[in-house]
Length: 432
Ligand code: AMP
Image (cartoon, rainbow, N blue to C red; front, side):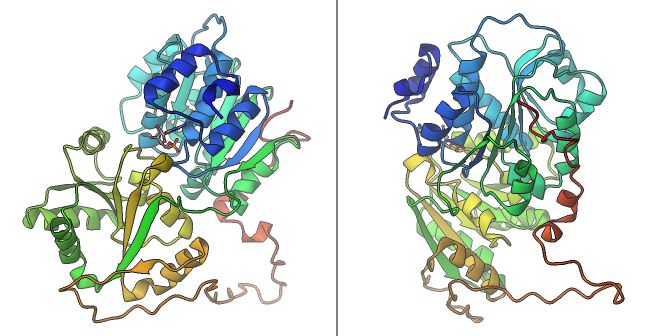
């Protein structure tokens, strides 16, 4: 099926063809018609599936009508977890709307708020924002939502993981109840469902794959390694296998800076992005990496969220992530929209449980490769699929009181628990 059958008009179709997309991706096939029909949506789609276009294109179509702008007003609001993703989504909107007169603004913290305030004075069609700065602007009465038509919560699972639930609830309180609401999340976890659960009954749920799966175009393999030889192994692989580019994930920000220095000593130019670097520096490093000028980028998981690098050929899990979902997100940076890619994980003995959880989620064992010159002293056993880590029972702080039943609600994280229930008969998604 082609884009022209989805109900999009010619300026958008032209922009899509300028981008070189020949056919819609599965999420686009499902989401675009539903959004055009005005339905509310809860969509499970990981990054790399074309999910951004799946909501941006129909929103542009809906906004493409005669409209008289009022100051400080916004017609579509897209809330995202990170500055990088905000920039990226706004850049996508600019591209997809290049043959239309639609205004877009990216708004996030860590930079001077004054230019953002000034920009809002005239009003914008589409505002892409992180929760914290958006709330600040709302409090300063720099933006009003009485003309809002569509709300998008992008990467909802990540926003919850980052503790944004209270901010999101406060923002939603300020929005008109008559609006279309779209929630996108890589995984529909219990917490995400809680955020979306109160979605009014006729919200359409779309899942691209019922279980989160890694794109099949990604060649995944792992190397077992001792902790003290990791950086030497990475340098060896980069040189021996003549890697063109790699996005390297690491857990800790000080580890990121250290690894960049260690690679530098071995003649490999690498840069690190993490929360402690200034926004301007992060943007510069990211641009250099995107343009290919910088070949090796080391990033902590949060900093790397949402990075869209087009044809990225390789990602490395220098440290294995704690959650299987995070592994899927990370390797989804490569092999995007059908292109092939390689995902390599370094696995040390202490990572065994994490590896079992990841492989159980994938439903298969990841191929292991041995690298000559790097024998392992502390071996990692082969995983057991469907491994369930044993949890120690939590001590009851008040033995006279019975423990709460093990209901889904009681398993919720404290931040999500605090989520305000929607008032009266109204869901957080508003009334229709
Ligand atoms: P996303 O999942 O939104 O992060 O998009 C992943 C990548 O797929 C981006 O680089 C998009 O430009 C690209 N993309 C989106 N839709 C299509 C399509 N229909 N055909 C080819 N590439 C696409």
